[in-house]
Amino acid sequence: MEKVLIIDGQGGGLGRQLVSELKKAFPELQITAVGTNSLATSAMLKAGADHCATGENAVLVAARKAEYILGPLGILIADALLGEITPAMALAVAQSPAKKILLPVNQCGNIVVGINESSHSRLIPEAVEALRQARKQETCRD
Image (cartoon, rainbow, N blue to C red; front, side, top):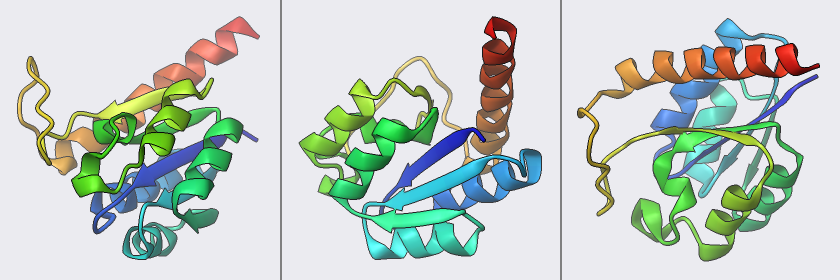
C-alpha cells in the first residue's frame, strides 16, 4: 500500500481539502496527516486521514516513511507558516526520498513568482492530478 503524507499547519484547511479529495480519488492509499498544531491535525482527521499526528517529531518520522508528501510550499521553508515549520521539519521534508507535490500558496512572507494566484479549490484538483501522474510514472518503472 502506497504511503502518502500530508503536512499542514495553522487551521489545517488546505490539508483537510487534500485528505478529502485524495480519499475520493485514491481510496486505496494510506494517508498519514501531520499537523504542525492540534487544530490542523484535527481538521485532517475529520477529513478521513488513516493516521494522524502532531508536531515536529511526527513530521521527522513520517517524512522518512512516505512515498509522497503533499502540502503547501512552506513545508520546505524553515519558519514558514507563521513559524510553525521548524528548521528540522523543513530539512526532513527536503531530505525525504518521497516525491513532493507542493501547492504554491503565497502567504506568510513567502512569495513564489511565475505563478498565478490560485484558490485552494483550484489547486487541490491539480495536486490530485499530479499525484495520479507521479503514481503512473512509478508504475512504468516497475
